[in-house]
Length: 340
Image (cartoon, rainbow, N blue to C red):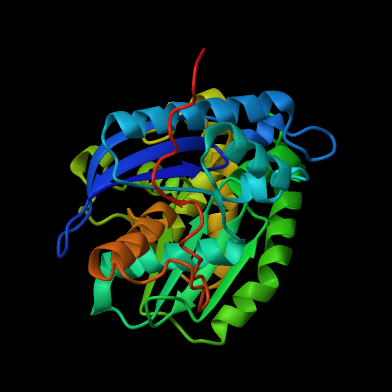
């Protein structure tokens, strides 16, 4: 079966096409994406502007055509904090569906954490007892811990790399005072969730997902993406401390020249490093294993579980921490819009 997965994130919009069969791992078939930072289109009231909505609708229309041209049999689309936290998010979702026929599944922060954890567990399997996962997006940081396929506890906090850059480090070269104030804020926000997570004891494996963590691991010495997803990649806390100091002295342009860092994400790298190192300190983690699978793969795998192995099961149940109602945002692609 060929599945199209449309991911509306804070920094990019991405359509991934994958093929999957019973007993086989999902194989990427084609990909179509472009940078689209919806948070850059927020007005003073926290609403996505008309221009931002047009950009979003334009890409979703384009993605639908791309998926249809590649004979997608099943389709799912979801969005995270960029739309969820905008003051007109409900209107944007309604407009997207009305103009494109695509219904976006809006995930809560806890659902993001849970479905990302599900992907991490599937990637590493049962070789580890408890897993703690950190996932950093543009708008939020998710933390999840558990022994099973879904976490026992999951948190979502407003510590996304993009959000913190806009609100705390808007200048090309931040001042020591700005960095100090951001560190204090990050520590305060992390205090409650990390205290709760610590009550569960030390995890067997601490992992990290998302482009931000992958970029941080890359600049601190992890293997490049060209070596494939199966190479072991680790983010070491001590190495990250050194690089955090270096990033403070670098301009956005200089950061963009670092290995594994894109022009779009370069401004956010310092904020991401500060969050990562403070979280690792509070959780007493010396290193994080980088997992190549994350939220998109978690939703995709859950979909395949239902469709490929039990096609008679209704896709509308919602149980457990991080479990989502998989009926929404899924199904056949809408028919092409009529043209005069």
